[in-house]
Length: 275
Image 1: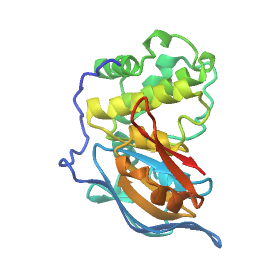
Image 2: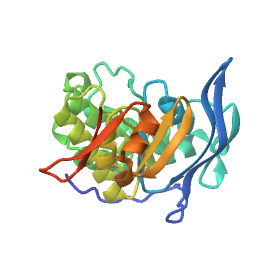
Image 3: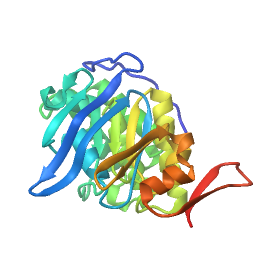
């Protein structure tokens, strides 16, 4: 993995180390008579990689959309840094937070370089000038995500793993403080899953950025993340250090079925499995 050189973060709001990036106090989401997220208190710190796990319908995507301002809270409060989430202008928010939905939009005919360049939009605007610093960010983002060799290829000609890296390159070019990724490995084979998660892990370590990533595999979450946030039926069950997640009582509490844990003799890692 290539190291990415830091560029000036013009206009970004620097948060002191260890300060809350996101803060939710009693935040909930209700649509009609259906509650998607029950009142939730949650703290997400700057510069950490969070794995968001839980069964289907547990509220993971709703929570991520809430953080990304793609979904409004019915009650409670949300803050980014010290400011209410709704108080940020669209451009200022996009300079802080980058969101990749589970199903990215179609980009028929768009080249990889053009896709990655879209990440610079929050910094120069639709009518702004695409300058030397923007070009540098695009080049470095493609280099860091190992898609520079595909720069002149159409995005829709890439394999699933290559395409995911191209989308993540766009988020890197956005020069954000935190990435929100909704199941970026769901359609990938095991090799590409490992590659994408390793990429996100390395980007967080190299650039001091944070990430919240929805995962279905608790073993992957424990392996790559700093902390694991577990939801069940729209309720927060656990927020725990990733290394402490693979315990039978924690797994059973989240998934509601008997779970076991074994040690992989080759790597020494713990592995959780349903009994």
